[in-house]
Image (cartoon, rainbow, N blue to C red; front, side, top):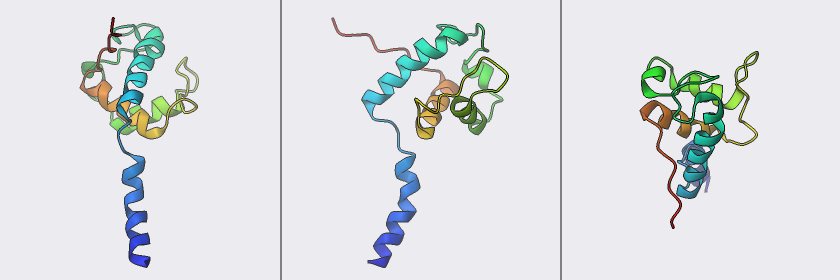
Amino acid sequence: MARAAVLLLALLPLAAAAEPAPERQQQLVRMVRQDCGSCHGMRLTGGLGPALTPAALADKPLESMVATIVHGRPGTPMPPWRAMLSEPEARWIAERLAAGFPEEAKAPR
């Protein structure tokens, strides 16, 4: 019994860091394209906020990008998104931004 509890506790961080479900991923893509795009440009190539392209983010540490998404940038227009996103979701977004963010899925006709 104690072994099972230790194993469960050891696996807990992995469960918390799991990828968002496919439906949530679609919601996150839409949120980034619409909400983040309102400042960072609808193509994420820059606007009021800086570009969020792989080239622009190449020298940014992933942890720094996650922290910026979760906590915002005090003294700038970048708000914290922690009320709408979990840290694993922010990490998923940061990973996708660094790799080239996906387009929003087209609604079926």
